[in-house]
Every structure is written in structure tokens, then in C-alpha cells.
Length: 399
Ligand SMILES: Cc1cc2nc3c(=O)[nH]c(=O)nc-3n(C[C@H](O)[C@H](O)[C@H](O)COP(=O)(O)OP(=O)(O)OC[C@H]3O[C@@H](n4cnc5c(N)ncnc54)[C@H](O)[C@@H]3O)c2cc1C
Image 1: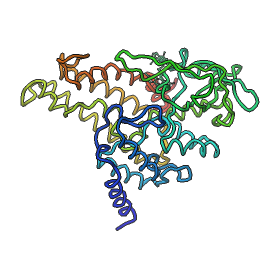
Image 2 (image 1 turned 180 degrees about the vertical axis):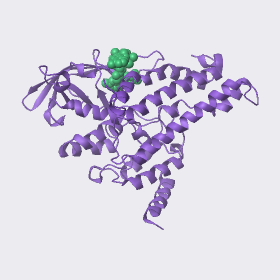
Image 3 (image 1 turned 90 degrees about the vertical axis):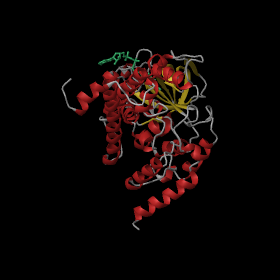
């Protein structure tokens, strides 16, 4: 047997022995682990799975072993991915540590920063949140005003962020701050990391239309941030910030953990769309030819998207995403919205259940998800901004 053949067999055996049965099913809301201990998974198996995978470094399979990663070369990593997908394993660990700040630190962090932060990300000890957007700075992110004044060995941070996902559960934040007001706006921004337990940090949850409260407004009042956690260089944080956004937008990180929990999974109905259509029509066939077409087109789009994402992982030489990640972000957002609209057409009035016995729990859940899912084409940069990036940086069109 070849060396890679051995790796596949050993990996398959190890996964068979170590992946708990309940971790081989579609993600259930509340059972995911995003790092840290403030928000607990409701399934104890999730921690067994996390611990076992983290011990092998497989929560971050390609990161260097010296920081606790798996150190896998690309061909082995792809095999691991296939084997995880084969048993429909859930990602052992999600969250912004693994998907955003970790890969960014690997590129821009000092040795000391990598040693202090990466192991706790890989082990799932710390939950991170993203302090980018402000009330006056969303798409035009570089207009941000949160100020950091240099005071010897630390910065004094004042200001506020908004839409900070998971801030109420986060242990640490990666945060964009203004360190120079006298230069063009992109050139006076720095990238800092600090603990959410630092004196002067407070959060206020924002409630959504569907009753969920996934994000917060975050306030900083004379927060002291040690300079050892300035990433890259003072006033050169924009470069780091945009790099991190490429990781956020790629969705490759979630694919890299055989994602059974991403947006495409969350919107999946309890049965395949053709069966769902027959169920709601109370018939053995889908009589409506237009609906049949829509279901086929939708299924083809999903397969094309999944295959393109998988090809992007396989083809990427450096394993680091570029501006083309905006394409994934845009297509995924559009697909999710279209698929949910299609489900609405299939379910008819049963799609609009808010509470009560006339609706199943799936119908109520989908109705609420439908409202929340609209935000997917805003989060991580709105669709219009993604199209601007594709036009300028991918297609090279003029401004
Ligand atoms: C679910 C969710 C989670 C989020 N999580 C976080 C988080 O954890 N941390 C964080 O920092 N932020 C987070 N955000 C905020 C998100 O990054 C911003 O909402 C987003 O960048 C858009 O900014 P805005 O809301 O200020 O809208 P605006 O920038 O005010 O945009 C309003 C509208 O104008 C359009 N527009 C703006 N500029 C242009 C342009 N140049 N060309 C064409 N159209 C344009 C936009 O597309 C949009 O339709 C989250 C948002 C959502 C919805």
C-alpha cells in the first residue's frame, strides 16, 4: 500500500473509533462548539469529539504542529476531509478563532503572538468576536472612529462597535482602531487583540425580528490594550483586516472541516425538496411543471456551488484564499435566499407559522430562519460590496 493509502486507512480507522455517533448527524441548533466556555454545547459528545480532534491537531489540520495544529500536507489534508465527509462528521470546532483570526495570525502574527494565541484557538478554549463595523462604518469600513491612543506600553481604546456577532459569549476580540487621524483613512488604522474581560469593555445585545439575539453593540471606555497584541504594524492594520475578510468570505474554512453546519445545511428541510413538494401537495408526483423545474435548477446550483468550492480547496496552491472568495460569499448568499423562497412556495401558508399547534416545529423554525437568513447577504460585506470586489479585483474592471 502507498504512503497515502496508509494515511487513508489509518484515518478511517481512527475516525471510526473516535467520532461519537451523535457527531455523525446534521448539526442541531445549540449543539455546535464555537470555542470558549461561556456558551456551552447542549450535547456532551461535542466536547468528547472536540478533545479527541484537538489532541491530534485536527481542529486545524494544516496549521503547524508547533502551535498544536495537525501539520498535514495538502494531500493528507484532502484525504482527512474526504474521510470526515464520508461519515458525515460534524466540524469539531467552529467560530471566528479557527475560521478568521487563526489563519490571519499565521500570516501576520509575531512568533510570540502565535505561541500565545494559536494553541488556545486549536483547543477551543477561547471564543473570539470581530470588532470591525461601527454605527457610521459598515461598507465604508475605513471610516471607523474607535480611537486608540498610544500610552507607553499600551493603547487606550475608546469608542464602540456594532453588529458584533457573539460578543456576549466571546473571551477575546480582534478589533480595528484608529491610531492616526491626520493621514488618509486607510492609513491610520491598526489591528488589536484584547480580552473582552478587560475593564471598560461592555456589551449590549441587539434583538432581531425573529426573536434571536446573535449580536451586540460593544462599547470601549478607556480600555487598556497591551502593545504586545498589536498585529503587524501600527497604522498598517487595513492590510491585516482585508486579509482576514478573505478568510471570512471564503467559506473554505468551514468546508475544510467537512462542514455539516454551515448555512447550506441549516436551510435543509427534513426531507429532500422533491419529497417535500409531494408531501405538501399530498400527491405522489409533482404535478406543477414550473415547480419541478425550479427544484431541479436549485439542486443543480447547489451541486455546482459545492463542487466549485471543493475544487477551489484542491486547486489552491498556497491554501490561502484571495479576492475570488467574494464570489463564494455572493453565490452562497443568493442561493440560500432563493432556496428558502422555494421552500416557502412549496409549503404555502404553512411556511408562515410563528407559534401554535397548527404548525410543526420544523415549519416554525424555518419561518424564523427565513427572516434571519436575509442577513446573509449583508454579513461579511453586503452583496453589492462583493460585486464591487469581484469587478475590481477579480475581473480587473476600472473604478
Ligand atoms: C448577521 C450579521 C452578522 C454580522 N457580524 C458582524 C461582526 O461580527 N462584526 C462586525 O464588525 N460586523 C458584523 N456585521 C456587520 C456587517 O459587516 C455590516 O452590516 C456590513 O458590512 C454592511 O454595513 P452596514 O450595515 O453599515 O450597511 P451600509 O454600509 O450602510 O450599506 C447600506 C446599503 O448600501 C449599499 N452600499 C453601501 N456602499 C455601497 C457601494 N460602494 N456600492 C454599492 N452599494 C453600496 C450596501 O450594499 C447596502 O445595501 C454583521 C452583519 C450581519 C447582518
